[in-house]
Image (cartoon, rainbow, N blue to C red; front, side):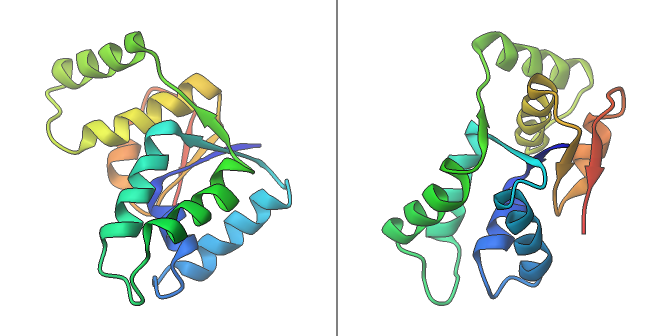
Length: 144
């Protein structure tokens, strides 16, 4: 089984005070135990860093700690999915054709990575837009 984690799941797994920390950590632990193949969009790496270092978490997460969390929980266990310039223009065309605007474009990047890597499932805490973007695919959207 191949599962691509959305940013929201990674943040929840890293931050103990997050209300979804325990279930997110359970999935991350399963990935570390190789119970499934973990995939992460290259875009997600920097998004995770941005959220970790700027959100009002207590205690505040420093850039060094954020980097360590990413290294230990993404870099060393996940397969990173990169998009080409053609992939980005395909996303842009889809957004335009379907008259989709705003932040859904970032979820479209994740969906394109899932398609490109052949993942079976996207794990997210925000399933609404992902469900819309995967209607004509075999990708399952899982949330908790």
